[in-house]
Image (tube, helix red, strand yellow):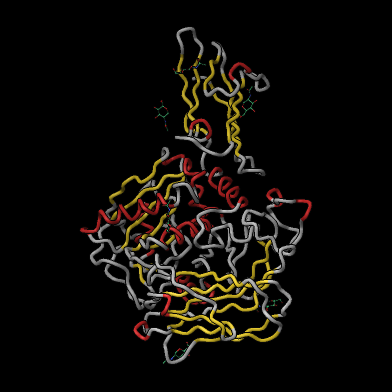
Length: 513
Ligand SMILES: *[C@@H]1O[C@H](CO)[C@@H](O)[C@H](O)[C@H]1NC(C)=O
Ligand SMILES: *[C@@H]1O[C@H](CO)[C@@H](O)[C@H](O)[C@H]1NC(C)=O
Ligand SMILES: *[C@@H]1O[C@H](CO)[C@@H](O)[C@H](O)[C@H]1NC(C)=O
Ligand SMILES: *[C@@H]1O[C@H](CO)[C@@H](O)[C@H](O)[C@H]1NC(C)=O
Ligand SMILES: *[C@@H]1O[C@H](CO)[C@@H](O)[C@H](O)[C@H]1NC(C)=O
Ligand SMILES: *[C@@H]1O[C@H](CO)[C@@H](O)[C@H](O)[C@H]1NC(C)=O
């Protein structure tokens, strides 16, 4: 599968996208990587590939007709080889088992490629350890995870046909990641899957963010104006659109600051006071208990409580406050209460959103309409759903309908519906032609809850002649003395409503051999 590689080669902008994170503060860092030559996968180079031991994780078909995802382990020593394969399988399962890519898994293969690192783990304070790809954090904060040896990663990817999408997997239990040519994630049980699926969403579907405070809003889930949404086919109530759901973001902040007990972090903001409810989103790391931290608005405790499953890893908290903000000035205060956490407790980012009344803002999670999204510079674009999509909500495992449709279109434009066509001559001179199709519809393994199907049409020697008796059959008998025949396969799924480029259609004529 090569077309996706070329797609990546064309993608000169490497986005640092970490889900409600603060990628814009990294543009300098990012630029440095870019100038150093963030590697396009096919660029020629002299760096030799590391020794790669590749194991299949989830394989649905031949590499030549699947989109292949290869985990490349970094910071796993020879002794940690088994751990690497376990970590990679956990991630591959997580993004295909009942969520995220479950519908399109038959178009994907997941592989894991092990190369031993001399040292275990990932680097900190900008210094990589002695590892295969040199992953490191900038400080100790749970944020970007960068690579020091892109040329080695590229060589590894080039050395195998299992690598349309390389994923650098850092042997580290905490949040960290990076988007772009190489998706970077960690073995964090909580954040690893979230980072991976979000970054793959960017790379595969070619969409930007849906969360507020990002830089790039583009693709099938983004509109610059309410009348230019590319997802009108998914509107829940087309007759009501374009109706923008009423909300506003009066404050967003990216402190990324270590907290201390001597002085609280605080910032003022103002509200028009014309909304019905509001929400405070705050992301912190390094917390151990609900008593460690207090978050106030105007001196009133908003009731922050730790998510105990996450421990000291980074987590994004959403606190709904079912009352309006009064008109005028307000202040958010974040106070560290546990002195022992100084040096690790960190305030990453926060924002407040205000919502109109229930008539003005549809909170139904599956409602597809027009929701305003606010960029890092408070520019408004529109997204299809409120919080349904993992391109907005880090901890949901699913895409909205517009993104799933985009996912199908993108993957199917890189693979063929037909895995194989075989011709077998019969004694009477006729030819038995058999198609092997992608394992979708009736060829899926196990039950599948959505409506989808194949429609198959065979044509005889004359392009216009339909061989009606073989309609919807994966094989046909072509009469003796016939020199050529044709076949058309149409795949349909309830998840694709618009297929402008006919990527759900396969049509070919063959000579009888
Ligand atoms: C995927 O990982 C998340 C944690 O990030 C976990 O809550 C969820 O249960 C996992 N799901 C599957 C299907 O493995
Ligand atoms: C964003 O713009 C809206 C509308 O102009 C304004 O009400 C809001 O306060 C702004 N938010 C920020 C964070 O600047
Ligand atoms: C304590 O935290 C506050 C708020 O983030 C900051 O302004 C101050 O510089 C910090 N003090 C020390 C000693 O780090
Ligand atoms: C196609 O089918 C033939 C006959 O079964 C087999 O020999 C060949 O390996 C198959 N090719 C692919 C790409 O699966
Ligand atoms: C072939 O299957 C499609 C559904 O995939 C169906 O709509 C069509 O009627 C079928 N054609 C015949 C001739 O049975
Ligand atoms: C073609 O051969 C296959 C495999 O032997 C068989 O299952 C199928 O029924 C044949 N097709 C026709 C139309 O006879």
